[in-house]
Image (cartoon, rainbow, N blue to C red; front, side, top):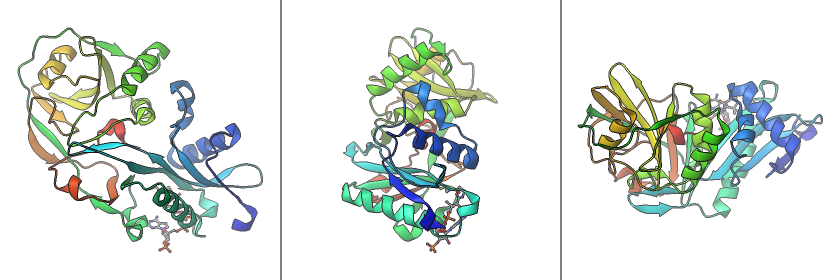
Length: 293
Ligand SMILES: CC(C)(COP(=O)(O)OP(=O)(O)OC[C@H]1O[C@@H](n2cnc3c(N)ncnc32)[C@H](O)[C@@H]1OP(=O)(O)O)[C@@H](O)C(=O)NCCC(=O)NCCS
């Protein structure tokens, strides 16, 4: 079967091949990354590895991408892996093993010092040196609101709002010095599209995009993109929430607030490989839900 397939890498320049990947991911996960067309296009650092049949259908894929991080104050040259799928009729024949090996070999050649992925099947990756690390969120009573201008609520469906969000994301500072992505523009926008419960608001005096949701008396702070991260007290004043408790889904070192630590149970495990000591020694952390990939 594999003999009838064409292997391709770095194929996003070919519109038909990219569309074939969009179809594979939609058929596998029911997510539409074709929305990237109106959000500014795919991540330019993405390095897809895939197999295509004679009709041009993408039957298997695994992608690597550059994801610069800050860990404990240090900039880290990191690689992420995503978009792993094989069409049902091609499973069990070693296609995914082949694509993983190609992607990991490519990343080794790029000298990334740290690799990460999110998965509900950690067993796929343990033999390649990945291990699951626990993630933690932070929760506690709200601080008193500090006086700032009210925010404007944005819509991910509105082109002008998308342009504003992109412009802020391009210049963002890491939301935490302990653990945060420094770029990840496409993931932020896609995650906001995929989950309609996520609200995006613009704080004018910090030129900050706040990603949040509210429920059961709790204000859930998911991410902040800005060149100047506001304090939690300022965020809650801008959003004008009446919630009594806060839950924050990234390390809170820039927020002027500390909560209790709680285990974060997402639908996927975070797996990492490489020099993980700095991360594991830096205290509880999690990858912001807007940076998930
Ligand atoms: C998981 C998936 C990508 C595997 O593709 P595949 O081409 O059938 O996998 P392969 O035949 O190349 O097998 C590769 C290895 O993974 C193992 N494996 C396959 N499916 C697995 C699963 N569901 N859970 C754990 N390990 C699995 C195989 O035993 C094999 O191990 P080995 O290299 O030690 O022999 C495919 O079943 C799929 O697309 N599933 C739905 C989407 C998904 O879960 N993607 C992964 C997201 S992280």
